[in-house]
Image (cartoon, rainbow, N blue to C red; front, side, top):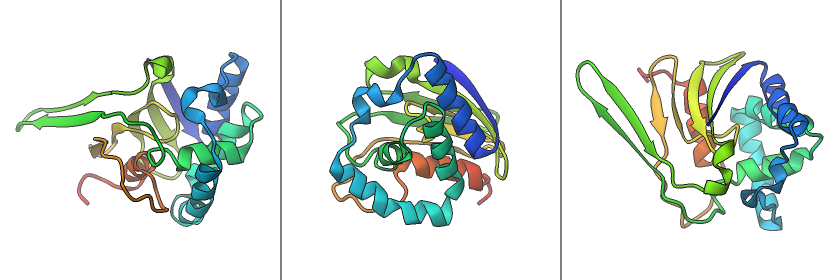
Length: 184
């Protein structure tokens, strides 16, 4: 598992990561989960106003991620904003155990083994929000982690029967780490 460190502005963090992958011959868009369909494009475009209003900094990070390997911003935001809404069936789970002195936070990751070399643990120290440590299979969005205030969040997958516009599950987890403390 790769351990990434992201700092400075959101754009700089995305650009640094995208450019590093590009320099090392890794093309994110050639992975089996990166399929861009017209349905996903339309869906992501409908979601954009929600992100522009509530989480514009993550769009800057996506723009940086696309600029790093000289890719198309639209392809990257389409992939990331529609993730967990048009996907195949995987069934990851999270659990926590706590007593008065300890907290254990665990995950079973049931994702594509073809992508396991891209799985990451990331330390985020970006401008303008809480710092956090998170795990991801798809950069920028996340499946689980904990922020500097001890707020732990993780996904247990139940795919929607109805797909509506707004934050997808991985972006919602990320948003919570950036904006919420554990006493909310």
